[in-house]
Image (cartoon, rainbow, N blue to C red; front, side):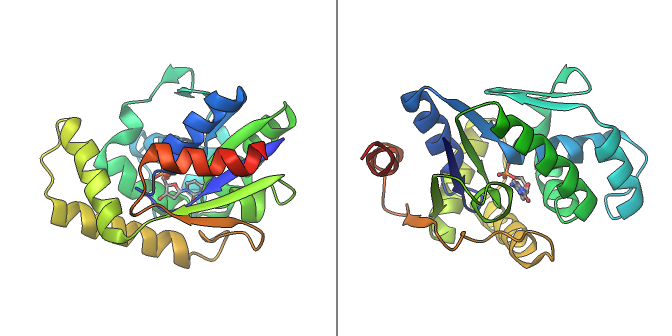
Length: 213
Ligand code: DC
C-alpha cells in the first residue's frame, strides 16, 4: 500500500507522514530530504546551482539513501546539514532540474517497490506514484506555515525574523509551483486538507481515519 502526502513547506506534511507511517507500521519516505541532499552535494562542489549539466552530473553520481529517519549522502549522515537555510533555498532550484528529478524519482519508485510506504513531497501523488491507494494534499495559509517554520527555526537556534521566513517560504512556493517539470500540485484524485486551524494530532487522525476505514 502506498500513501502519498504532498504539500508546500510548513504545511505539516512531514510530521503527519512520519506519525501516520508509525501508526500504520509502514516505512516513511521524505523525498524533500533527497532533493536537499543533492543541493548539499552541489554546495560541496565547485558547481553553480544554475549550471544544469553540472547539477545533473552531481545528482547522477551522488549516492543518496533514505531509511526512515536517516539520510545519507555518499555514505555520510547529513540530517542536520540538509536543513540549513542555504541548502533549503538551493533545494528548490535543483528540484527544477529535469535530470535531477528523473534520478530521484527512480530512487523513490525503487523504495515503493520494496513494500508499503507513506511518502511525502510535492509530486508523489501526481507523478511518482500515480496508482497510490491514498493521496493527500496537505496545505495551510502562508501565515500559519511561516509561523510554524519560524518556530522550528528559532528552536534550532536560528535568528531569522518571521518576515524573512515568510518571504523565503513564498519564494520557494513560487519556484516549486511554477517549474516546468512536475510542479507542486495536488493529484486529481487527492484529498486536500487545509491544516491552518488544525493541530498535527487532528490532521493525523483525519488522514488515518480515511485510510483505516
Ligand atoms: O519538503 P522540503 O522542504 O524538504 O523540500 C525541499 C525542496 O525540494 C522543495 O523546495 C521542493 C523540492 N521537492 C520537490 O521538488 N519534490 C519533492 N517530491 C520533494 C521536494
